[in-house]
Length: 298
Image (cartoon, rainbow, N blue to C red; front, top):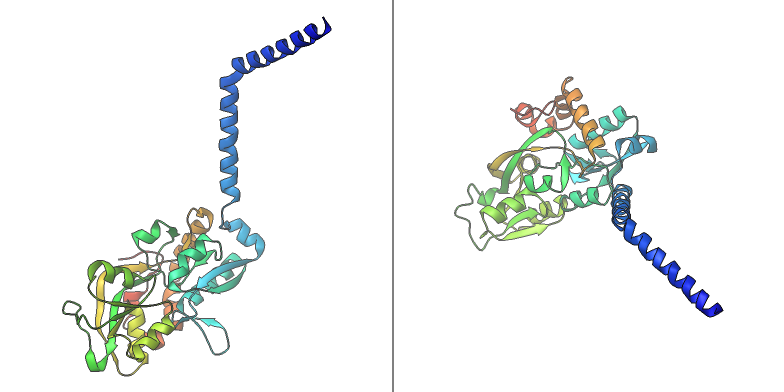
C-alpha cells in the first residue's frame, strides 16, 4: 500500500507539472524568446569593437590611423614625428576633443581592417570615398578632392591607357582606388601590386613597371619632387573626395567629426592646413581645386 501511495503521488506530481507547462507554454516560450533576443542585443552592444565618443573622451586619447610614408599627407619626419596634411587635421581634432592623439601607422590595404578590429577609432589616411567602402565603414564629410593620375619616366611618358603595351606592368598599391579602377576598366593591363607607398616608389625608380597609377595628388607630388618623371595622365576616372572614416555604426564619433568639419570650415581651416603642409609641394595653383571647406563640395 505504501508503495502504491508513493507511486500515485509521483504520478500526480508529473501530471500537474505537465498540465502547468501546457497551460503556460505559449507565454513561457515568448518570454524565453524575448529573453534570448534581449541577450543577443546586449551581447551585440557589448561586443562592439569601436569606442564611442564618450569612451574616447573618458580615456583621454584617440587612436587615429594615418600614413607614415606618404609625404606630404602623412609621414614621419627626421625627428620621428608625424607630419602632413592629414596629421595637421588629426592634431586639431585631438585638441578640440581635449584628448591626446595616438597616431597609428596604417597602409592602404588595412585601413578598413583597423577600424573593424578596433585598432583605431578614426582613419585619416587619404581615404577616398567609394560606395564599396561605404558598405564597410562610415564616412564623415569630405575635406579634400581627388582623382586618379599616372606618373611615368620621362623616357616613356604614358599619356593614355588605351594603347597599353601588354608586356608592360602598371604599378599600384593594394587596397587603393587605382587598383580597383584598373581591374574594372582596364583588365588587360598587368598590375604590379605593392603594400606601401615606399615600395611602390622604389619599384618605379627601379624600372619594375612602366608607370605608377595612384591618387593624382600623390603622383603630382612625386613628379614635382623627383626629376625625370612626368604625370602624363593627371585625371583618370571620376572626381572623388577624401574623408575621415569610423567603424560602421559608430554614430556618436561620426556626428562629432561632422560637426568638427563644419566648424573648421567657418575658419577656413583646411586652406590653412594646405598652406602649412602642401603648398611647398603643389604651390598655390592647386589650393582651391583640392581643398574642401566645411564638407561642402561644388
